Length: 354
Image (cartoon, rainbow, N blue to C red; front, side, top):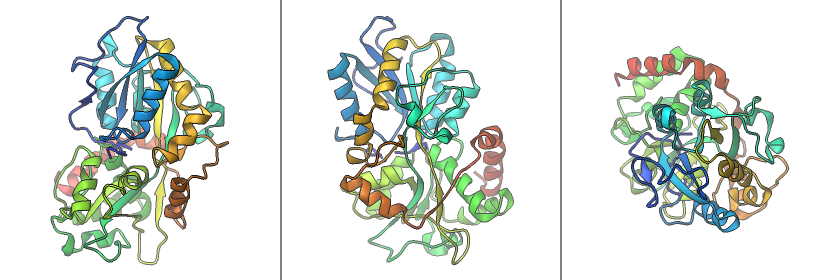
């Protein structure tokens, strides 16, 4: 969704990145009274330079509450897979991942009911009606192109199959990465269904460098010109532009003259069932949706607030509005995507020989 931002926001499966305070086996302590929590999250909200959204949130939360955040980063699908493997010995307290993987986590019985303070200001479509998860950072799927090598972005999906992009195009793996799964969702919407979408993705495959478990790995390659086209998400790619200035965000249309389109791909957070530090986790979720933190989603994180009652006016928020201007926003049926994800991914594998 998934997904790396500042360290690029996407959602790839790759090897887990663990904070120094966390061992490869999970949290350093299962003591329910410990002043700590463990967060499993899709990549994108934490910066390698230490100036990302998560970096500030974790620091400020500890200063405010005394609770340390142990952070484990992965792709959207990987976070849910790890939760499922650890079901008998739960180590995580909070999971943050992109759709449809947050729905997948709920379907596997991995989430507990909790409605954080402020969740009443989150749009109905951006939270679970049963209180299992709520969006904390809104975002939108996109593609990026190298602005130094290309004078303008490809206008349509069919343009992505052009021979000039052979071995210069790459997108993260559907079913593994949140943003990779988003490629299928947008293609099926724009091109009129599964059949036409898979047919064209089969043609585009001739240009595809190969699988990538992490969307965030593609942004620097595009900036350097190793790739000319890659998938991404608006928050991640916009936030990276200061250090990767040769990225241009675009949204291919289904046909010539068609309107560019995209859909919301939010970071959604849930309380993990049988979390070892439930009380601390609830405080953290409340903090994520607090007004002060939500005002920093754009100014610090380069993303979109999840709360309807907050109207960001900082420079990043203004720039993001311009990026989205004229882009049609459609709403996927996430329940359908969750139910049929394996079918769509298998169709993609068949079409592309992946």
